[in-house]
Structure formats: structure tokens, C-alpha cells
Image (cartoon, rainbow, N blue to C red; front, side):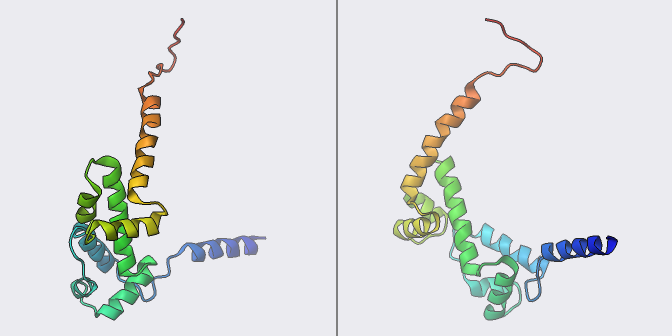
Length: 153
């Protein structure tokens, strides 16, 4: 019985381990992710990211995909969309301003990429996000009684 339990534990440990063979070293992965996040509003070249890691472009691209599950371009695109969603939800910036802030070359390209990623265009996504806010705010604005305090009417 103990033999079966040991094998079960060993199997669960091996399944949860990240397969990092051929991936970026942890310091390179964190460096490149920081460079990407710091430069989201700018043009990011995979060649420059590879140079920062002292790797060739092709080796860097393969290692990055092995480490993150996405190509560098796809990971950058996901981060730009995530940043755009944050700006859409939390600011009154126009979609043109948001597209430029997130590093897209123009609003049309931003809208195309956002729709491809989220299945809905950014304007409609903003409308849904705004509609969701009042329901959250109305729940928060109702006073809650303190624990142990009973209010009689």
C-alpha cells in the first residue's frame, strides 16, 4: 500500500513541475518580461529583446516560447490587450489614445487585435464594463451592520 502512495505522490510532483528544458533562464525571462512591460507603448523588436539576453533571435524566440507557452510577439500582444482593458475600464481616454498608449500603430489595428482576442470590439467591451460598474457600486453603497449589532425598525 505504501508503494502505491509513494508512486502517486511522485507522479503528482512530476506533473506539476514546469518543463524548462530549452527555455530561458529565470533571470533572462524576468529581464525580458520587464523590458516588454516597461516598453509596451513603444515599438518592441524581438531582435532587441534577444540582444538584451545575449541570444540570437531564433534561439531567443524558441526559448521564450518554451518558457511562457507563447511566442514573444503573442506574449507582447496579450500584455498590450491586458493593458488596454485596464485603461478602458479605469480611464476616460479615447480608444485612439488607448491604442497609442498600448503600443498599437493606430486605432484600426488596435480594434482588430482586441476583437480577435476578446471576441468583442473595444467600444462594446467598454459599454459592458461600464454597465457592470453600477451593480457593483449599488451593492457597496448599502450600509452593512456591524457584527453583533441588531437594527430594529
